[in-house]
Image 1: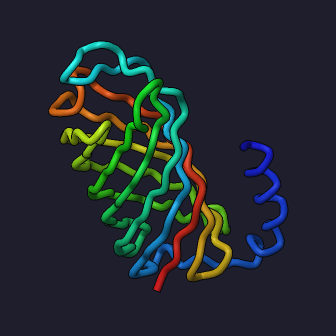
Image 2: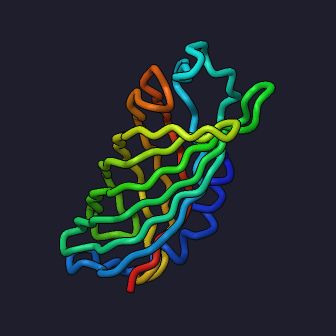
Length: 185
């Protein structure tokens, strides 16, 4: 995956050098999507039968984002995510997540735009027809590359925590690398 990210970056360097991001003025309405690879950290146990979940890491999924970027790179986004994890001798463990994300994009005066994010979400976990609900928080960091004033390619990593609730007895920690893009209008 790192080789792929490096190759994408090298191939986009000419476009990156010519892009003029307007983060200081705020880029307005934004929407985007990312491919995510959630990696569970440690064990987690179901509420119904408190034995460790025999999942295979990592999982796979997609994340969508819709929101507004204000001047100085401060943005507020609604996020939606669907993820799945293979589980031994069971249907896949599915994670559905909807929440709010506060994101700060740092204007460096170049096409490379580092960002930090923090958010909260309602999370639904489904397995074998049962649906468990819980809440979660997340924090992330990464870098976006402005390929045009209205578009960026981005890569980052997020640490998210799903609290114990109707789905799990334990706190579910996930480290999630992501790769995708955002468009501004």
